[in-house]
Amino acid sequence: MKICILSDSHDNRAVFKQAVTEAVNQGAEAILHCGDLVAPSTLSVIKDIDIPIHVIHGNNTGDLHALSNLAHRADRNIIFHGQDASIKLAGKSIFIVHYPHYAQGMATMGKWDIVCCGHSHKAKIETINNVNHEQTIILNPGTVGGVGNPATYIMGDLSLMNFDIKTLDAEWQP
Image 1 (cartoon, rainbow, N blue to C red):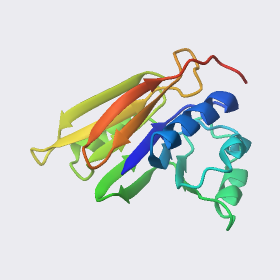
Image 2: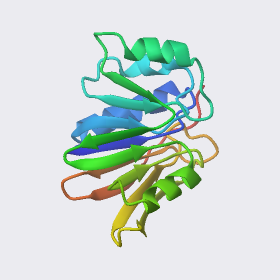
Image 3: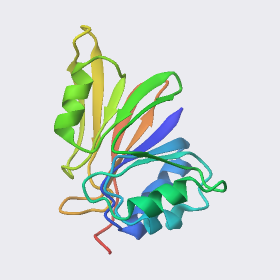
């Protein structure tokens, strides 16, 4: 199963749509957004994407009530988890949180195969040893909105546990 991990779109709808469209064209079967989507209306640019979209809020929360309402509409594939999420995809346990220091702590616990985060606007793929003497992958896709750094996201293949940082040719466009 291929997934797209992104974060910190900060209402840059054009680049957000570009990233999701590219990911779907590369075979993504789920989108994980690690926070700072900001306005729920940003999701309107990908309303025709027919795969699950897992969203947490981050520190730039926008309108959480509207995001919750949007996620509860029967015709939408958006799953709003709140502050963080623990999900299972293709037999892999994944934890999603906005803050890298929180991700680091959760990864050391050894409860998840993958921990995804955002906030720093710097893309990074890291493998750490956990308390079970195993390894956990921490994925920070950077900022898909291109805020202060290049617009990036991560494509992953859960069957191979292979992850790549993708850079978009885009600039901040509120």
